[in-house]
Image (cartoon, rainbow, N blue to C red; front, top):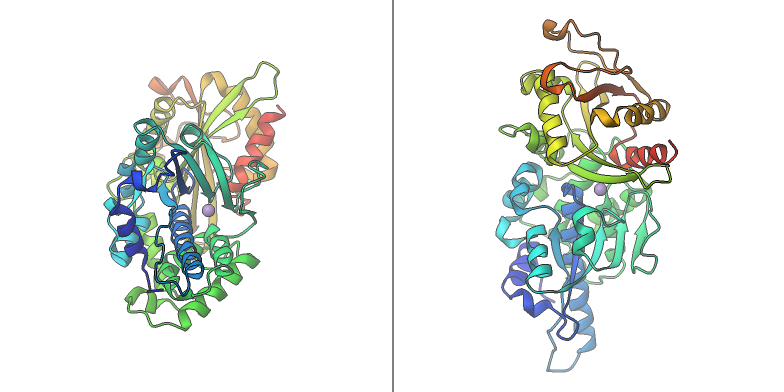
Length: 434
Ligand SMILES: [Mn+2]
């Protein structure tokens, strides 16, 4: 087998029309996609899963036709799909940096949600999907995907698609670790796997804050595989040579990615929310089938920084409320995480905005979350431009004027281990019992 690269793989996919990947009689198309936040981990997991699947299928073909002169080269690949509109990729500067700079992969070599919509509606295809970095279809994906054929994920198990194969759901820092560990055991010739490593290692660094948080056994074994696989092969990529697997202290690679991830220059509040956003429908406990539509945007800046950047707390709240209304949400949650340099401490904050009709429900939900997420009153910026509103964050904090119909809260979240991944099941649980 000749050595392949991720770029080579994507180019070969794009060199053929989509129709050529369709199972002729069944009108089925096989894809792999990450979750709808399309963060670095999701994109890396989807691309690596598709790439490794392709390597494995090639290996099987070669074994099947070993010794015969007529090699059947036909193999139906899994298409990696990035689960956001194409235009939203540019908001994720960490991913764009990795793709463009390290892999010379431009947007046109990738498939997006827009493509999936076209395949589904114009071509009337049945979509079979492997889900990576999530284990439950939600929102748009529910309409677009017909069958779930595999799951590799590190979120709470929704116990769906029990016949999916593989079905791997384990606690890990990065989902890419599970992808690596799965394919490592199946692919014999590891030489073509090398090209994928820096993308996967990047996800591992970002998801564990450079090995400071949430490093689990599967992450360690993936790291060993990266080290072992790359040790045996020459690589010409400069970035890759800069990766020092053993030192986790001052890693230039991590800092470069983190900086790109945090770069929100030129983005509107709406863009900053959409950059890492997920939407949920939570059932309420009542018998009348009431539901709450909740959007959660994760941000890697402090609330104070965001307020300063976007013309103050009231302006920021107003933009958030517009986003909430525009997306027909009952509640928008902003989960902020950052390193507080003054105390060298990883810090989390939470901002919430809901319509006034949902004020009571959200207040009750917050009461339930306070002990679990260790929510504490948020310390307001000492700037005196908001000095007259008594912001005891646990009580209702209304702002005047056009925002009078909405309610806002801000908290410091002392349970810093709980990211969105942990906060969502907590919210779901509380709302289901109100
Ligand atoms: Mn993930």
